[in-house]
Image (cartoon, rainbow, N blue to C red):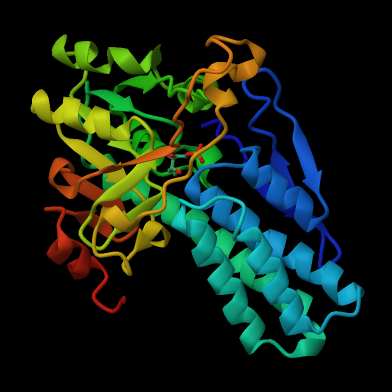
Length: 348
Ligand code: MRU
């Protein structure tokens, strides 16, 4: 299957982060080099790299780059790590994978000999990267069981290879089911306002040879009513201890539509997307983005100058609407605090 590589570290401790600039897709598949922590921060902030797991991996490598520069400026190694990690933590607020990655790098710093700080951080970032790739494969394996030959499957936003460092989460489920010979018909919501579904999911699935049909977000209910969709699979940016799930804005509406039509709504996400410190979804920080994403997306003004705009980038789907959460460990079902706890008994 032709699955794109989202990011990779090039070279040794003096190396850099290379990532596909997702703001240019589907028109151009261009890789850019991030050699400064500012470049990594900016890439995350403006969604050159996006999707919860991919943001985490990028931030891990960003910490290597930022720490290396601070040490070269004479900053004490552990302080250098703290400064780089604190800075990267300000790039985007909702995907908890970012903060998990930064915590992992802080732990690596605590355990490292100061003389080999950059090497120790790079080792840890590479391990975090490899673990993300393995989690994607395992999610695909567990989730593929949920799909049947002939299913119509709706997905929202992009939870594919482009959103991770591996084969994706929701789309890994689709890739693995397809690899097992199941014939699927995937519907991709275009995902206003930044069109991750149209620009990224449709591009990625098409390249992989998966049967994909693009629809506008406001068509999901009627396509469900027509009988074309049998199941919904989406990704997640942060999952609370009771299973409430934050994902791209519009996901909650899709879940409500699925419930109204009696269709199972599944979430696919690695353990790094769970925030067991939050008892429910009400505490999940929801990023608000620039008004211009709605009033003049992609350079064309489509709203009157001066109109008031509200642009939350994520919403929270309550656990009661979720039929199952696929993780690298299996499927959490039913989705509630006990179900989540049973999969992560040693956490929290
Ligand atoms: O704003 P984005 O594009 O980073 O939002 C991404 C999503 O909402 C994805 O569905 C989520 O991160 C899951 S990625 C495997």
